[in-house]
Every structure is written in C-alpha cells, then in structure tokens.
Length: 375
Image 1 (cartoon, rainbow, N blue to C red):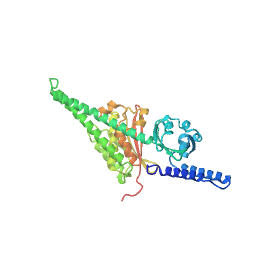
Image 2 (cartoon, rainbow, N blue to C red):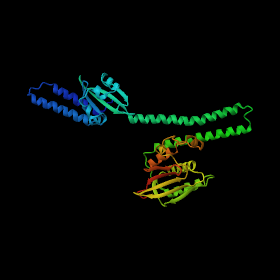
Image 3 (tube, rainbow, N blue to C red):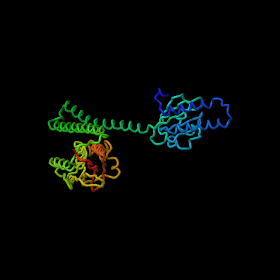
Image 4 (cartoon, rainbow, N blue to C red):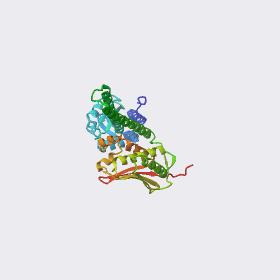
C-alpha cells in the first residue's frame, strides 16, 4: 500500500489491524477472561488509530460497517455504524466497489448530495475485513469546472470580434459594386473597433492572470493613497468626454502598504465603469474617508440607472454582465470588476458594491492603513 501511494496513516491503520488479528489468532493458555481483554484492547487500538485519520475511513467486517471514524460519521452520519454497507452507502457504484479487488476505487458524483464528488478506495486487511477510504473531490471538481467555464467564455468573447473582423475583411477583398469608398471606410472602422475590443480583452486576461498569480504575495510598497487618487482623477478628468470625474472629500497623507500599479488599475477600472454606466450628465465622485480599526475607505459614486439587487452578488464574476449588449457596445470586457476583486484581496481589503435602481451605484474599497513606518 505504501508503494502504491496510499495515505501513510491508512497504511498504519491496516498494519495495526493486521498485527491485532495475528495476536488474537495465537493460542493462549491462560483463562478466557484475559483473551476478552486482549480482544477489547485490540479493538480500542484500531478505533483510536482510524479515529486519528484526517479523512473519512470505514472498517468493514465482510459487508457490515463495524467502525467509522469521526470524519466518516460527519460525512455520512453516525447511524452507518453497524449497518450493512450496501444499505449505508446506497449508491450503485459504492455497492459495486464491495465486490471489486483490493485497491479498487470508484468516483461517485452526488454521493453526499448536490454537486459533491467523492472517491472511494477499498483496501484489504484480511479475508473478512476491509477498509474503505473516502476522499472528497468536490473542491477539485469545482476548480476544474471553473477553469473549463473560463476557457469557454474567453473563447466565446474572442471569437465574436474575430468573426466580425474576418467577415468584413472578406467583404472588402471580394469588392463589388456595393463596396464603394463610403462602405469601405465604414467597414474599416468596424474592423478597427473590433480589433481594439480584442486587444482590450487580451490585455485584461493578461492582467487578471498576473494579479491571480500574485494574490498570496502581500505588497509592501509605501503608498500615499490620497495622492494616488488625486493624480488618477486629474489624469482621467483631463481627457475629452471625461471631465465629469470629480475628487470629493479626500484624506491627506493616507499611507498604505500596496502595489501602486495595481491600485491605479483598480481606480481606473472603477472610474471607467462609473462613466460607462452612470448618467452621462451627472458627475462621478471619488473620495477617500477614514474608517474604524485603522482602515480607510476609497469610494467611487455615480448617479445613474443603478443595478438591480439580483445582479449585485455576481458582479465580480468573470464575464458577468447585467446588460451584455450595452457592455459590449461601450467596449467592456466583463473582466474589470474581477480584476478589482483580486487586487482588493491581495491588499487585504474588502470590496462592497451598493446600488439602487434609479439612484446610482456606490463602490467602496476598504483597505488597512500601514502599521509600520516606511524605511
């Protein structure tokens, strides 16, 4: 079992059981009472050994479950001890495992309900006794499903503008009476727009990948958050069509441990969202306020149509859009808030989005102040 890569604790449990069975099999000249004590001591040793195992383990005598450690009882219920395994485990694949050879395993979707996924492995101890090791693979399955969904969504998002580009290029190549100078100019404009959309999507995918790769590395650069916010607001408001970005109440000399590039990206993403989805004739206000327990709150507020309550829990999901048509028309990739969420998590902060239909949206990023003096 050790050579096959089995859990070391499981190997130890099997060894204890095997040694116990050898001990009990040796003829004992003493009176019967010590034999009973020895048998009970052996069972106690086995029970203590499997109880110490981190993962769920069942001990079967033929087809009956005679022991289950705490993890197994928590997963399947305490009532399984003493039951026939075919009744306790219920699932057809689990019943099939009882007739398979030593070391056999099965993966069972929905074994404990919902979208759970468990792997069961059968280990022989002797002619009558078996161990069944249960491993919860649900988290691994969820991660794999998330990666699959992400690749599918990214492929779809890239395919749409690429198909448009190819279509218009082929039309221009074919020419014909319908493709005059005005039509050519319009087609080239569409090609340029779709190409820029693809470029934005690729850049956001690369940014998201980079931020996720660093999410466990806390940044340590000394940042004056108020000065950074003022600079970004000044740069954005100086651009044509974005003059309505305003700096509201903003604390001075707010020092945090951060990554200047990522915090600037966070601000630009949130301001860009507010400009796209807020009312075009209302200002977008950026503020920096004090909070309790040594924290500060960076806020971006717009006055616009707002967001319905059912959308709020999903806004930071990749490619999630409340209005797909409007988002794509405005050049959105559906990754902006996902990037913001990961940046906030890396900085040990908290992201809150509040919105009321017809009133507007407020995004708040709570960050811890720097606790030590910069060198």
